[in-house]
Length: 216
Picture (cartoon, helix red, strand yellow):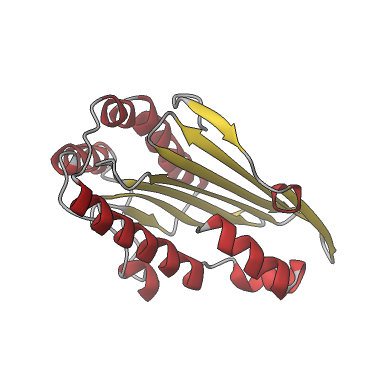
């Protein structure tokens, strides 16, 4: 999942790294890992699973002084049914990598014409998507697997090139980028689809503390 990237595990309190609760259908487990990606930013990986739930969420948040996009992936399976497959790469403001990002996302779409965009994405996602994203309600496991392969291909090629050639913002642009990063994180903090499940299973206080760390 992360092998192509130069990652080093980052500190995270044990209470957030692993939590499990009994549910009617079995044990619900939530595991979280944070990684530094070289000197460029932080990657945050969340896996929620139970006998009938499998949710994988990944974010890369660049440090504000780097001209790099946010990268996100989410795969949701309930029972044996794929529910959502999402992949996006978001440049929050004009930056040196904006065109390369647009080019490799366009190439990914061109290589997978069978991956039709969902007609009914949630409103909150429409407010933060890049417009070049993949947002699917998959018809089958093959489509879910295709998104997973696109993810691996992007990490192994284009994302490596972005990191290797990343430029920095000037101080005023860094301040603006930091503001936009915080607004993006806050938007996800408020609208994360898993909030209801987490509040019910792990408690509202734990969930509030966890979300504050995940999207800090």
